[in-house]
Amino acid sequence: MSIAISVEGLSKSFAGVQAIRNLSFAVPKGGATALIGPNGAGKTTVFNMISGVYAADAGRIVVNGTDVTAMPSRRRIRTGIARSFQNIRLMPHLTVLENLLVGQHVRASSLLDLLTPFRLVPNHRWKREARAALEESGLGRYADETVSGLPYGVRKRIDLVRATLAGADVLMLDEPAAGLNPSETHALRDHLRALLGRGLTLLVVEHDMKFVDSICDNVVVLNFGEKIAEGPLSQVRRHPKVREAYIGVEEEA
Ligand SMILES: Nc1ncnc2c1ncn2[C@@H]1O[C@H](COP(=O)(O)OP(=O)(O)OP(=O)(O)O)[C@@H](O)[C@H]1O
Image 1 (cartoon, rainbow, N blue to C red):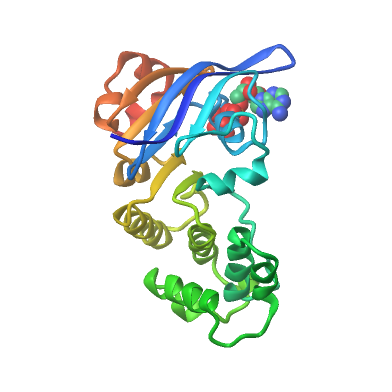
Image 2 (cartoon, helix red, strand yellow):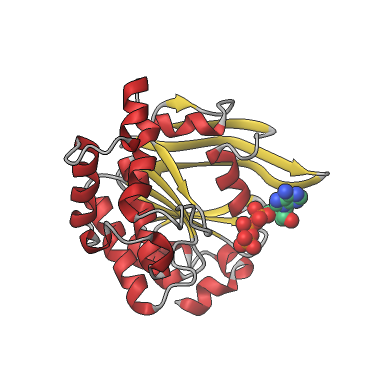
């Protein structure tokens, strides 16, 4: 089994408070792993270390075989990892297509490539790719609409299209289902399943256990910065330490 993200012996303290303690886990390539745990367990801190927002105090993070522990966050996209935030970072005054073209420019390899998104070349390869990716995700009709006018659930999915077009094959999703209505949640679930079908890897922080159950084959449970259980959700939710620490899992069962 090949590994997309490997976290080994990770630790992080904030002003003497140990947020993460000697944490190790692996995210298998081509699957969906959820990082769950009660409020304050350390999930966001782990995401921040993997994406490079925070430096780790100790330990190692390897993405697609590259040690990124000391790599600046802006360079980590080149290893194939992208993170989506709860506050979507699309440019609201641009169209969907324009947002996707700006995202694609991340993988530009030459100065000419860098300038290309801003040249008005009608059938340019990047535009074709962006339109095709939107069509494939069932979002083709939004290509020329301004982002600010679109429903939240649609914007979330456009953010996913942007990340994959930028070359990411490992997506970190921070509470993807938060704020979505039931039909938007279903559309997101189907979209993520389609990405998994194409071989992408997902690492998800999510409180909605039904959503976790519908997407993730592997769950890592944190409590007070330590891993207390790992495995399929059906097994993890029976674990005594999880029942004790994370009553939400038991209640949702
Ligand atoms: N920048 C920071 N400065 C100080 N303490 C922090 C910082 N970030 C996180 N912490 C602390 O680290 C611990 C873990 O917080 P974190 O936000 O990672 O938990 P979480 O599992 O994501 O919680 P939630 O589910 O509520 O988002 C908490 O005790 C929190 O107060």
